[in-house]
Amino acid sequence: MPSVALVSTPTVAPALTVRECAALAGRSQSWVRDQIQSGALRAALVEGRYLVPGKSMARLMQRVRPTRSASSSSGGHLRLVIDNTAHKK
Image (cartoon, rainbow, N blue to C red; front, side, top):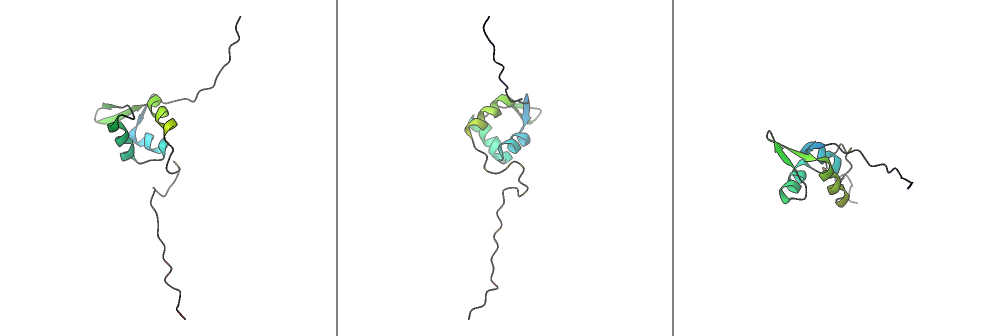
């Protein structure tokens, strides 16, 4: 009898919203919609909302690195601080 190896595979949600995909990818919702429009990410329009198959999102995530942490609270904004308190001598 041949031996069988059990392989653990990550659980993928059957369908994800654009917001959920953006959070997983660490990208904006408009980036996710751009991926849908370009054909890089499959999606179905259901009652006016895109639903992305979990497997399609998993394939995209293997090809694309997140630009920021999904738990980042900064929302991807930069903050510039200028110290103009130095006195000239």
